[in-house]
Image (tube, rainbow, N blue to C red; front, side, top):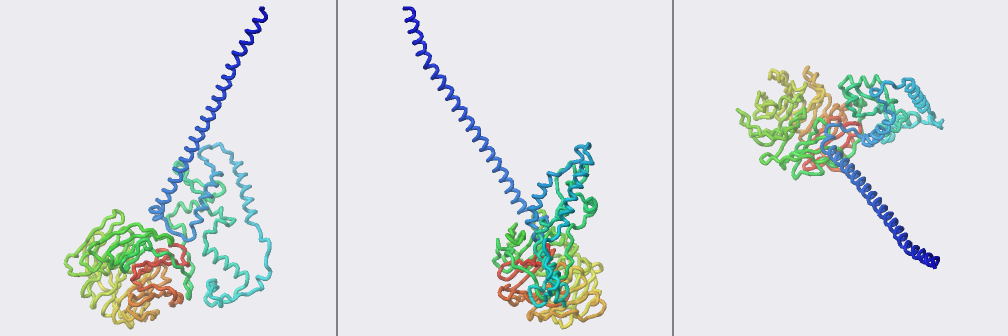
Length: 563
């Protein structure tokens, strides 16, 4: 009996223990599921955090791009074909950081190891530089090509009378022309590493040890020369502009974002070559950032009581002088963003101050007055500081000799030279064939000046010879048949723009070294309307033309690499 009872009790114990084991297994499974759920939740939170960080980084990048687009690039000069190169240089800088050595952090570095590594790198560079072409064409030297017959090959000439060249010379000039038109491919050259310097903004290392250059890029002499001078790092091209055909292309209109409702009477580039002002009879003074692609509008100022006849930057870039057919004029301070109304001038009864010129030293503003008077106004105080008197009426003005001399012409057909230090006329002579002078312009160096008349004749003089008694012009331009309204030399005096507002497409570009007109300007199938104003950018790369239709036409001159 005892054994039967014990067996029954064991069976009852087993049956009682079985549900407890099942419950334990269920608890373990629940815990595992909860752990998996928590891990998934944590992963999702991490992913969300990473996505949030990436969004913040992208937003910061977009904000920086917008800031650079609106403000930052105004202080850096435009260089054609350098957009892609900048991106490549940034990538090169990131890669060059792998080889960066900070000698100030650890003075126990082995000099011999560095020398060994550098010598190995330099040997590899020398091997790559000494690579030879796989195949050479022997027929190149035997082939002769006439580059004078084909119009599109004339640009390869180095002299005007050059015609036949050998095949190797032809290939080398084609490559040089390609590099000239596409300067952005310099990064692909084998020796490009020696011309690119890594730029790191480590302020502490700059303060302690000067500029730090990554290993493999050291060129002590050139770096020292750069740091010891404040001259321009980019040298201007000294090549001469060839006559005949002008290489240019039409870009997006400078005022495409905000066209004018009236004629454009003034266009001018700021000294930084990227800011352009446009003003006209719609009483608005507009500023655009010129890049040739978007030409973003920066600001617009409305002058309620002054339809603008002329607006001009001071050469130092601090102010804009705005005038119309009124007794007063306006001064707009670019730094303070403040507009001041000035006038009427004390002691004067002029009802219009619409014609004026600003001296190159930004000290004097010369206004055309009544009855042959020229009004001299200080650009600082905006007060009348003196007057000059011609025999006839005044029609045009031009400064020379850095602002110390003034040229004037008008109704008596004479060209006057004034010394602004003594306020006296030291030379007066007849402009050959001129009855009424209507336009004047001096070259940037001051050795040439051009005088236009109401008959469409433009005379170009050597100023020293003219002052010495030689009255005959170097060249007489007779391509216009109506009154000459505008004369403008470009930055290196290789181009002279001549225009008349009385006739459509009446704008000619003169090649000064040969005194000939560019035959492909203006284009026969495109109209300029009635040109009213024109300006070249400081580097010569851009040319802006304002017309009576309210547009500012923008052109790129391929001979010049900088705006």
